[in-house]
Length: 325
Image 1 (cartoon, helix red, strand yellow):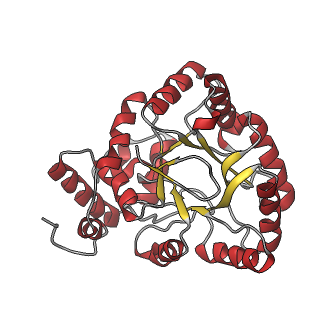
Image 2: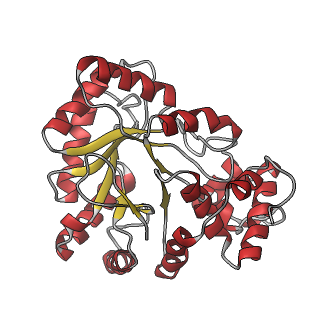
């Protein structure tokens, strides 16, 4: 595993972050086996959210961390202010306060290293959002904060307000990013920086040294090769049909063809090439991956050892025709 340093966090942050949507209150033993295996393989950063599993994902993660006595060795990223039924616009101080308090209680901790607003309310003033997050930062409840599914322009507006008013700026962001372009939103309010459509946002983040924690780094499994042009009708589960609607288009199958070819050349798995693509784009990028089974962990962890050249990245992005030798 590789680790980075982010200002405001007093411990190293793993380049690969493990998602927690698979943690369930009725599978406690399975949760513990998976989390133990992840930790043993260097996965020390975990992505969760107030809304995941109705709170179960935070509770299961927090219980495991407390039981193992490893709070000082792990990095927690959680998210709040996601729209809920009956409360569609929740990126407001009162909801941020409530969600963070409940998340900390569920996680059995008094702080989280990374805190993200799970969505944006583009018409709501960034001043009030920055003010409340700055308050939690000053209180020691948040290490660094930012937005998930925020446009770079809104992050820029938040940081301009912070700079003008002596407040803490956004230091992290969490958009979708993968070799595949997001053609349709898998869920409402999703923001992607993949492909040509995301280049300007990525350039702004890079120029301003903002760390990215990229979700759907494998495009919901599309970039593993499990989906083919001829088998899309065979999938029925939600976790399969959702990425098909978002990514299974000919432009992305052409990208997948190149991932499969490069993986074969290097003798590695397609998923490893897809994760390495993000890791090699920028040292401040942290792909969020979802190891559902213990046997997947070593494969994903080994992606940090694969180094892709700038020419290989450009070829995967369909910017060049001839495969780099």
